[in-house]
Length: 414
Image (cartoon, rainbow, N blue to C red):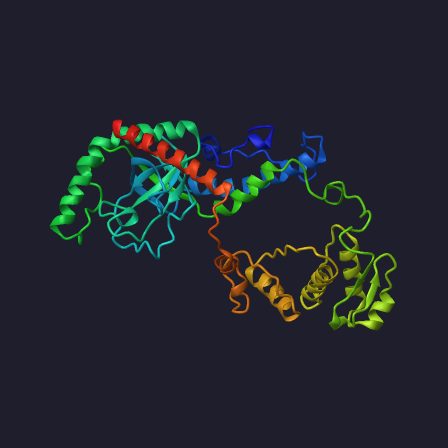
């Protein structure tokens, strides 16, 4: 392991996956801490714990006596830099892996081998080579997952030695794969594409270099952006409050000293530096606990408001947002654990008259919020102005195309 967490690969290595001992992890007590700076120590702790949460589950899947979701006779048959969904586009180097056909699988409904899922390749000579699924296409008849010789996926390796090994596999499999694909084409023509070649014949199986592929994670895509963000952070925002645990200092400067509550709260004017809970309870529908929560949120850089269901957390949260919006020009980022909670909050804001909303993310079940989704708004605002940035991007794409053509010629020579 690396002492600097920024040097740790997001994707686990072979050694990590095969390790059967206890992983080193920072203790909550801090007794095994080796970083003196508290901010860097907090970043290090969160990165290592979150990563182990993902890697530990992968290790359990691999070392299980009978791992689930194992695909036999996988072989690496090619490589590409061409964008799978846009023929004119380019992509990072990825490898084409073909599996034995599975007649009973409807790939349009099957959730196996998802995009960004992690797989491990193993055989008698190699164990625990990690790769991620980069291309999963199921809509093209006769291609990719619908290929008559067996489903094909695009996989990406994350370590230089594994990329080099995959290139050697392409070279070793090249001649036998050409024979195999010709047999597949002959069978497809003879049966009008109605028959698949079935499992890899034994005579070909002995000549192909094959692997057993184990699906080890279909959720790493959710961990990856958080780990990347932790690794890129130079310091912790709001470190005085979150790391050093200092009392809140001066109130936030984005709010004026005197703020006015919305019309539904009688437009009561509040002095943030001379707050009266008694006056607030008498003049509005807030109780004292809600008044204290409102004051804390408006006068602190960090505020935690908690309580059991039905105590008015969403009610107070929407009031806080209203006060900020009506008394400043600030925008507000609202983050919720679930889509339902986000919809509930935004619908509450809509009922209160707020219409400048952008909902990021999918799966909203609210018809009222669909027109505020980012994809809906982007379609309305789409323009076609060519800027300097567009020109530079086109130049970069042209260079990528040149690299793609060089890579294609390189693999033809293997």
